[in-house]
Length: 363
Image (cartoon, rainbow, N blue to C red; front, side):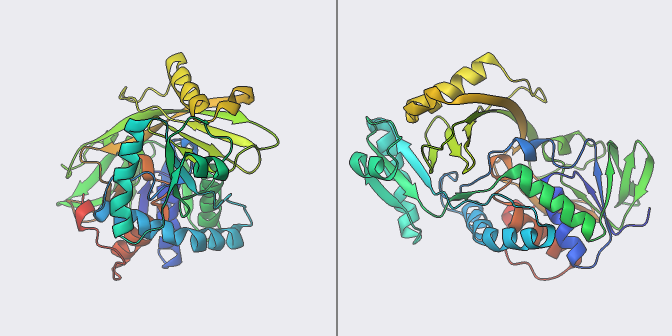
């Protein structure tokens, strides 16, 4: 095999990094144990929640803001190349407080965002219901984040995989990566079910499965899977349009009538089972925030595994061994961080200046 960069994992991260590396003129091969984008990437809801998802100011928040800002041009670029509609919608997020306790927590989140100069509107009950009449009428208020949007993750990863193929990237699907191949202290490739695959650089972008690769050196922190169950409903015509984010979960209405409800946070290893308890928790949360969902049709359910790091920060950039790079540990923000991660990883592998400081996320 003749390749400059071997990427382990062909989900949204692996495909996005491959796309940028191919644009830089490198030869890229992606090694995927299943099919591109069928694991965590396809299980995500696609909220670009730089403000609604992140708990506080700091380097991670700045990384999220930078990636969110790149999304419109990133989507346009991919759609023009592939002719695949990615489902980018400027929905805005309503962070709903259902009682006084939640109202106090929501108010505390706004202060540092306003200090940072970000757009956020503090709404009382009447204002929130005017903006989104479908909300629970007894709510106490809401924060509105007009710049938090959404994208369809399945369409995004399909467009990225298509772009990679058109630029000459190679996919080895259905092939399990077994062990990191190291020679004289340098990573030279991957030992796989098909034998040794050599490359000038190896990028680990396998999501939660990154921790299962044998031969990995000690990293900055641990990496473990966190299961998340999601429910998809359907309601036509759509009767609300904003993403509704609460302290127990979220509701994502798509313009085509699909409605995504999520999500559980479960520490149960690599078990992706959908459970009665999980569905009860999610649907109960959703009907509490948007009572009209009681009449929506249940379409399907699924579960995915988020790659969670021990310190809640992603592992990005050059690894402890020469020739090794990582792009994993994004937890609940993988889709949001796709453009910035791909840009930064490609720059570091190619050796061009970085647009963002990766020091806080060093593997």
